[in-house]
Image 1 (cartoon, one colour):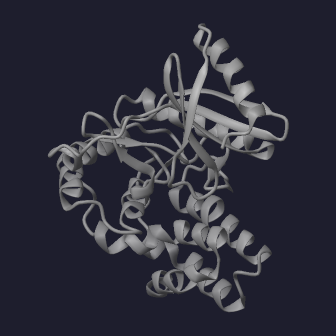
Image 2 (tube, helix red, strand yellow):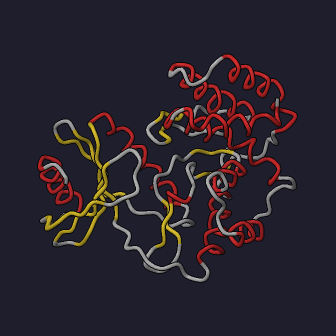
Image 3 (cartoon, helix red, strand yellow):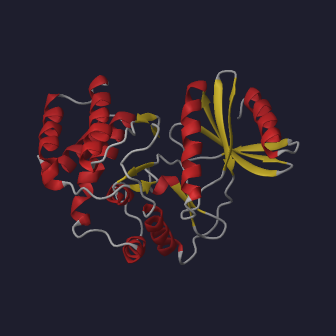
Length: 292
């Protein structure tokens, strides 16, 4: 149930943002989130999606809103349109367009793969972003670097290792493995060019819209190596084979990309270690052993 104070503030902000008085007529909890509370809210102006949590999450919601705007501006992948962010007493919330679910079209995977490749054609001079954001509820450092190898080590691996040390999730043995990996990274990791990434693209962050095609949400955007995005899609169960075929037809990946999946997935595996605990350590150790 949405707290009354959030509903009152959301009503006022929606009215101001939309320029028309809104009345909330109902709300229904939406399943699937790991961190935040989520509901569909119904009103005289239609339905919207709201996620809410403690007030400390306001900056998370602002970053998510900006990420959705960045993705939408490319006119590639479809995303829910952000409406507003707000605070109410001890809470913070984000309201976005409500996407009516549908059944997958026969072209779902091919359109999805080609659209992702088109997203990745949006490049930058450097890796990173002009501001930091979040992956899950963990801070994600996006300090700019000209080198992907430097960015991956300094802004992806090392901050997550520090989190793991602070939470007693990384012992001397694991830290030693990563030190060896960092010393050898240039032997294994290709440099590549900066590409705009969704940043947290797995099955749980995409859905089927009413038109039968993919909609993505919960981004952790930055300019990174596009193989990092592809690897993430394979971390917790592959997308359909036709997704990867369509991606490569639109913009072919460099030879050997399938052999580098674990290399790029060290970052999201460290993230999951920090978010969900030591149950992810065996998968992390298995991923890194080839590179130490």
